Each structure stands twice: as structure tokens, then as C-alpha cells.
Image (cartoon, rainbow, N blue to C red; front, top):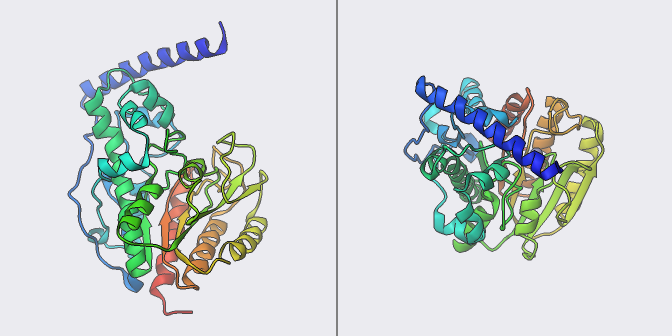
Length: 357
Ligand SMILES: [Zn+2]
């Protein structure tokens, strides 16, 4: 049997197995309902920051999502940690609405959007087999709506950053979603949706996307390939997903095992060059935690301390020049991913709340 046929058969067998498990879980009442809390405007935190998050970001389809290394509870864990540290009271999170369908139709090709309720196509996008028993309604509520809601969070925090200096979304950063198709667990391109919204509202400044996820932001590069008002600096591990690359404005390919000191020294140099343009109106940091040393989908060597320093370095590069800063979570699949992102965001919130340097 040739490879593609063998692969298809394996997927089908896996799909049958998952269907049995899912039906069993549903029958036993173990299936959690998708959460859909009402939107809430959130509260300003000291220094003007705001954090968007909703339990409705969680992709959940009867536990099948656990076949992907992405922890769908990561967002909730980070939100809980920020509350525990006393940095974001529970009622201070902005709970976003879903990104509107009309906006997403301007970001993505209609044929791609129409294909998302097809189980086979969606399985390729989110890298988890979506069994045939999940109909369009279930796919909408349990998979697509959470991605649209987190995209809404990115849009709201981009707006907030322009008005108050710092916006943080505990989700988003779906940088592999290209206009003509998503992959790598990225369905909608939230950054493109946010930039389009700001442009509609009259924002004319240059956008600087700094992508420090371990994987290249090919979706962002494709989305902004013909837009000279958006500049991308991408820090990624060489030779890993996605391949082939979609070139950005500045791609930095890092060797496996790159440690804190080598990473941070390189980042400092690259940031100095990226900030040379004098008309930057917004910095969008796609701050994946998968450069951590124990991530299963990459093999860079950052410690949690290095991750915190990375994020503070990018935040200060923007803030020291009085440029609004938007922070997005992006990838991160290892056992320290939630802890690392929570430590980073806590450090950012503390520094934003402190008197100016
Ligand atoms: Zn990644």
C-alpha cells in the first residue's frame, strides 16, 4: 500500500476508535458543554493595561482534542494564575464577543471558510481527527466558535493598546492561518482581522509584528505579503514546521538548543534594527512559549526566566518608544507552557503598573 493510502486508512481507523470513545463519553454524561459567557467590557488595570480572556476560548469536543499536544486548558490556567497573584481580579477580564463572520470573510478565501465544517478539512487544520459523528452544529459550537472568540479578544486588545498602551489576549496568535487555508492548529488569522479592524477605524501607523513563537508565522507572512505598512520580524527554530517557509521581512533561524543568553543577545540586536522605522504605531508580539526547553514540538533551550526576559525586552522596546504594545499567546505545548506564559504576563503587568523608568 502506498503511503497516502496507508495514512488515510490509519486516519479512518483512528476516527472509528474516537467515535466509539466519544459516544461512550457522551452516553456517560462526561461531555462538557461548550462555554459561552456573555461579553463584558473588562476593567483598566494599573498603568492602563487590560487582559482579555474567556472560558469560551477552550476548544472542547468530548476529549478528542487531547490527541493534540496543545493543552486547551492553558488559557484558563494562566487566567487563574493571574488572579491568584492578585494582578487581574476575576471580573476585570474583558470577555470578547466572537469576531464577526463578515470580517473573517475579508481575511480568508470564501472556499476555505466554507470548507471548515467538513470534518476531513477541519482535521487537517487543527491536526486532530474530527470524527464524522460531529455535525456542522457541533463543529461550530465546540471548535470554530472558540477560535472566533479568541480572535475577538485580539481585536479588542489591539484597540485597547492603541487607546491605553498595553493590551494582552490570553489566546490568539494564530500565525499559521493563511488567507487561503489554516494549518498548525490555527483556524482564523486573528492578527490580520485585528489590523483590518484598526484600519477601518482610521489607524494609519505602521504595524511591527514581532513573532517569537518557535515556529515561523507563515500565515501572517502570507496575509501581509503585499502590505508595506506591516513589517514582520520572526524568530524561529530552523528546519521545523512549517516547511517550506513563507518569507517574512526579517526571518531569524535559530539552532536547536539555543539557550537564554544566545537567544536574548540576538533578540536585542534584531529589535534595535526592527525599530529603526520612525512611524511604527503598534507592536504586535506573537509570544509563543514553545521556545521553552521542554516543549515537545520544538527544541530551543529557553528557561522560564529567559522567556520572561524575552517578553519584557520586546515590551520595553515598544514602551520605551511610546509605541502601543499588544501581547498574544500563540503556541506552547510543554509541561511549563502555562507557567511560563503566566510568569511573563505577570512581569509585564507589574512593570506597566510601576512608575515610568
Ligand atoms: Zn509554535
